[in-house]
Length: 157
Image 1 (spheres, helix red, strand yellow):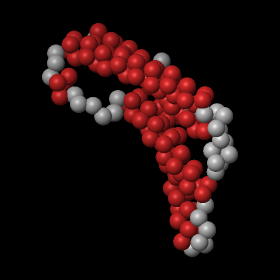
Image 2 (cartoon, rainbow, N blue to C red; image 1 turned 135 degrees about the vertical axis):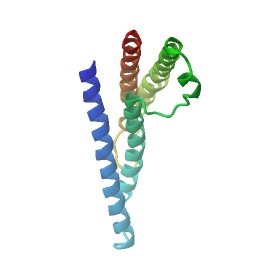
Image 3 (cartoon, rainbow, N blue to C red; image 1 turned 135 degrees about the horizontal axis):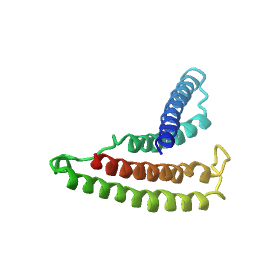
């Protein structure tokens, strides 16, 4: 599982960097096209918007994998070893439920529903754009299962 996690970490981190670089380049092009050539590009505007959404979702997925996501750990950190492990596992189980229901099931449903609707500017199905939600949901579930195994392994030592 550790090898799979490392691969997913690289994929999500490199994807975030590539998307961010693409966004910077598209926004730079957009500014140049708008102010110097007086011809704004609607394609780069829409692509930048979609890239921003993908960047947020993929980066959040990466943060779940690194266990660096936003949390309030004041109470959990003051607990003894075993109750702390139990609370951490419960948090991971809640994360699995959320990612499974909202991101995987809901994301797959919305992506499937929108495969027939085309984006007016890019002329691609909007379901393709929404497809990142269930993909990242599956990765978050993997990370949470990995984290539960890590908690159990750490607590045995």
